Length: 317
Image (tube, rainbow, N blue to C red; front, side, top):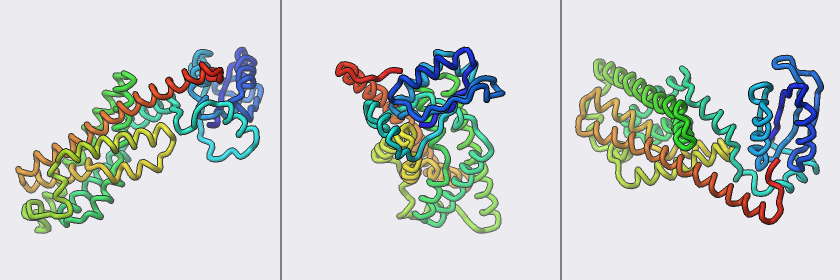
């Protein structure tokens, strides 16, 4: 991880000396007096993922989060010998280390909401409704990929795990408002389509061999939701965002929302409960799995570091 700091001049030497003394840190650069807002020295360095949380925790104790500035960026490749030596000095594997400050910051960003979030969720729900009408598995997959809801589900899991009430409430509210708006707008679109003769209730109630599973939740719905929640949280905490695409394809949140909107608009009451249950099972399963995954990651990492401490490995800044 690349770390860029703005350090008040009265703490610059202490911070610099601490970073230089840590073998898990390399490529250290100091630019005296270069920063203007806030004022101070700019210090940049590369830190192994395994050491990043330790370093950030120490920097927080130096009040750099309040009096200075801290920014993180992922380094895609560092083939130099110095970087390799720093990696060898850090216990564990990079993917196993969770940078908690980055996880929390990302969670707050996801829970902030934006018109883009509402737009993508609405578009995905509308695509899912077309998938239901045409019984198209390809469109179901497309709707899953377009849906942006997993980031908010992950934020909810982080809020619950770290007991951050504000983050939990914001995430839950965003999920409820997002799906309510997407379902409402999709239902309006379905009513317009029925008015012009494009669809009728038989399109929803007819046999749908490829998409009928959407409103028929079973035990496997819960299993898939749990597995997807574990995979999604792991991909975010390990910095492997590309794995999230697989999570999007595996969960049935957006398709269930699309089926629910159609069932309400065209009035297929026997499918409303099933679609709503499918949506709830997937959201609840992913959230619960996310909380458990975060807990296991913390326990496993702490246990690993305790073992390394006993063997004399350096694990603290």
